[in-house]
Image (cartoon, rainbow, N blue to C red):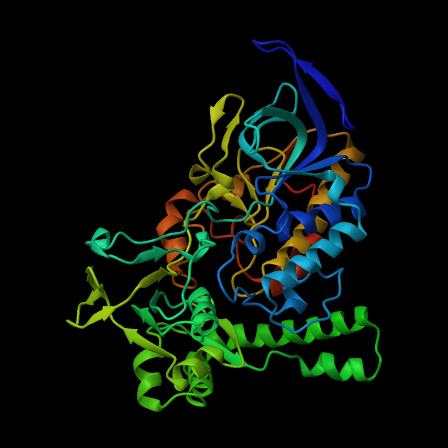
Length: 502
């Protein structure tokens, strides 16, 4: 069964229509739109649908509406390889949505997207070699059923409906308002207010300079410091190439290659020369702030790249602190009070509004209830194949991007892989593919999804028990190494023993 056939499915209240597609893409964010482009270009005979729970495309860039929201990766690498980026390296959410909209319109992807369709469950039948996907229309509550041969999971890695806020003592006693950036309210007025932003990552670093001009004062409260890279929000190579009137596609590719080369060196040095890299990062902060301040508030306890390093355009957060519009407290929270927050040092910070920029709740496979031949799937009991497929789960790929490089780089790599896999199955007449441990893998030691010694952000540590296991061989790991994967993944032998076809 191929194409967009409509079947009649018996139901208690009469027949319900079931739509069938060759491929079902979950999510119309940066991953889903990129994957759709690859599918259209490289497997044009495959019918597909994109189911998106939100009211429009964009994912993170649509949902997050806090002041100043911007990328923390450069758009030459966060943008798709096939669509030149022509703006400043660090882009606003609005600019990213405009870019994505151009991809959708230029490639007629919009007609394949069903907005306001939240997936509830997905059931695989080996008898029929089909996924049956149950979804709900978020506007009407109508239940819908789709079948597909292959599921392409592009829904991201965190729960969109609610950000992570720790349960601090006495939060209910605070008389002001507590807000998480992920669910920013439209009616929040910061003018003339004293604001505390709790957190030390990219969101906090974005929010503080964005609201500092409106607030009476904003205080960044962090438990421990984070590494940042301050710099000008422009790319000199791209600017020079434009002066030479080089075609934008070439500018995009050349600039992208240089950035990736520099990032590779930075990642290598962070492992091999951590103290030298640390000094370089802190020296950049010292251009804005005095030494004692840098030592107290911007010198992390971990080596560079154990957590994500965010780019800070023009050092705006450091400029805000130097101007006196913002301040920093590095301390732990004892409890909330009626007026604000009492720190463990005994100091009380007063505030009208407290913003908890404290991270995400990890979400594996969009909280969708998966079953295979009637048995519920617990992804924590599976072993990952290169961070994209899972033992015992047929005809499914999850796009999980990079932490030490732009997320979208993996969208392009996996776009090539999935379409090659689909075309291989069509050519060989196979309807089902599952990854399985090879005989030489059965005594392999299993470990967590990501090695916490190499990368340990809070949201991963809190949710590691939900994620698949990895092994001690590259095939069974999510290596997070773009520079190796870009060469290895295109050469994967689809007839290898790890692929079981039927």
